[in-house]
Length: 242
Image (cartoon, rainbow, N blue to C red):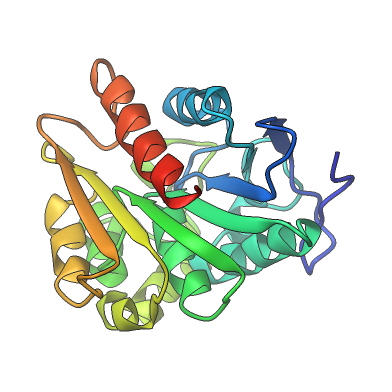
């Protein structure tokens, strides 16, 4: 429907489209987290739930992930911010809502803080303290030699570590988010602590920001928590997009 979407490096971004009501001009863009792709089960379930509610969705894999072009070792938050900009470029004429999971949540905060084309923002277990995340998860791994979580397909690059350290934390970007914003986080998340969402919430606009904790949910909203995630996000967006 949207043809080939390529980032500034000319790398093709793989995507799937879920139609909604034919007469709407808003669309949800759905982005994944580090080592993920557009086909993570909970993301597919969320896209299908939104589509069933009449809300069209484009879920895509960032460059270097899934079957998108590019190399995984080049994947950073800063590069993915550019990827997201290219996706939004391809959606000219649509009002865009962005949903990002984990590192994709960080991408959304950075992009929305500087790109008014994102009209609604949803952060799912969003990474906020990027430097702390890098040190906590990969501080004992040698960049350009080891891998993320011992996954051979996910080599840890010095570019990735430097980018997360340079960004350090996104809390100060919260006041720059001037659109309706939903944060969702599981209390049993052992990858990105729920405190990340609470810390950025403290600096967000209280009139336009909502925070939902899902008791017992892990980082990927697995099992019974997927249905709750779909219900909460779909309900919030359906209200916002009226």
